[in-house]
Amino acid sequence: MNIFADFTQRVKNALQSLDLKNSNGDAPDLSRVVVEAPRDPAHGDLATNAAMVLAKPLGIKPRDLAEQLTRKLDEDPDVTETTIAGPGFINMRVAPAVWQGVLKGVLQAGNRYGAIEQDPAPKVNVEYVSANPTGPMHVGHIRGAVVGDALANLLQFAGNDVTKEYYINDAGSQIDTLARSAFLRYREALGEDIGEIPPGLYPGDYLKPVGERLKKEFGDTLLEKPEAEWLPLVKEAAIAAMLDLIREDLAALGVEHEVFFSERTLHERSGANGSKIDVMLDGLRAKGLIYQGTLPPPKGQVPEDWEDREQTLFRASDFGDDTDRALKKSDGSYTYFAADVAYFQDKFDRGFDETIYVLGADHSGYAKRLQAVGKAVSDGKTDVVVRFCQLVKLMRDGEPVKMSKRSGDFITLREVVEEVGPDPVRFMMLYRKNDAPLDFDFKKVTDETKDNPVYYVQYSHARLRSNLRKAQEEFPGMSIGDADLEKADLALLDDPGELELMAKVAEWPKVVNVSANTHEPHRIAFYLYELATTLSRHYTRGYDSPHLKFIQTGNPKLTLARLALVRAISLVLGAGLSILGVNAPEEMR
Image (cartoon, rainbow, N blue to C red):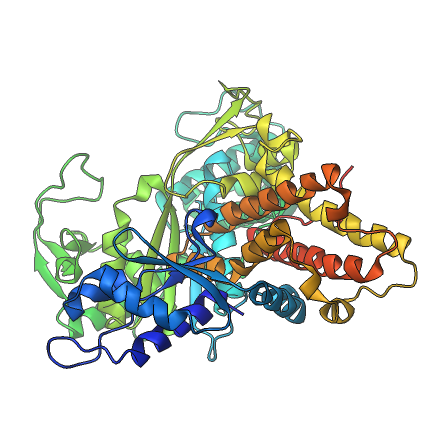
């Protein structure tokens, strides 16, 4: 049940009954007509922009159209009052029965209230984290991991068939560096004094277990081999160990990917047609999207793979990119971009209707090129969405955090999670828009106050569950299952605070829809905090006015109705926290 969609249709029906025509004698386009919650609840329960967006096409004043429309809306038995604000916005008050009907709908839908059903479900690929497998996750990976995971959960709740994917950058020079670093630790495991880690190699102690693993598997036989022979063996062991470490780190944050895609598979030959990159190039060449040419040097910092020579280029600028992109260098080797194109080709071949990349802010220049690739490879059939996550600054009481950095030269994801727990990390990473910088204060996220949003929302859920348990103790014979609560006399819920809570619950389906369409999971976190605030405001009134408390001793009928409201709010809070990947506690002490 989406009350905003319902009343949007009612407004459109009222407009159609007015038989309005534009200058061409045609009925106006109603696609921009919406009904929303007014910014100030004092103005009404619902508001519509209908007169504002239709007045110009119809050649009449917005207020004149608003007056015609309000007369029609006043005929709706669920509309108790209409007012015109400013030049022509229409505010509506609705009957309490509307909100009570929403409440019943919540109880009928259970934890699927607000979920969107799509048949067939669009296939969506969300790729996130995708850090080089050269060490444990560090603090710079946390935000992208949380945003990507919550976005995938959100899209799944909104009716999509979602695949969570991690792209393993296991084909570049950094993997050779990893292998050489691991080989040094292997020599150390065999008893050699390796001294200081040479510049250019990875210094973290996390590679010591890899050295021990190599010692156990190969003994000292690798020492007798030239680098060309031991390097691939060590590389395989090091990559496997790093991926195990990465999976463990992400699991500590509650993040699990369904697919780990290896970049190396794009370069490996597979039959007579060569590698996946070769096949991709043949496909683009057949479309006339590849040519031999030179590129001017990019503005600012020149990337290491730029060459002032004739190269194999992709016509990216034909698809909205700022410049064409090199696929092959003058020596015949592939650029990083070539692998990116082949990777998208693989996603397209797997049938995804939408591919989403969640990247760090340092990749901000990638959006146009990835979208150009999507348009070219899929002929515009697959939507490409790129979301960037700004950096996180770790603070403690307003001061920058200095942690042990036991993994070499960075603060690990695990250190952050172990200090405060995954719930505060996940919620607070989503309590600000992904492309805005974020300060993460260790003290604030563990304070048990309203100023700590994750505590406030979780406490609200636990408080509601506590009321359900207390009601069972107060009325031992009362059945309070969802089916029982549906049958409660919801007409008893007529206090302004109760109506405000039901109206807030009614916003949930719209919040889900807008958040999914804009790919902005932070909207879920904002809404949950607003719902918790509305709940607290009403709950606090009960201290001075005991007749407003949810449990009314001696009045099981009223209690049952209020428990229906309690259950509905807890369902929405639970669903929202689940999307964010945050625990919805039954109790908090």
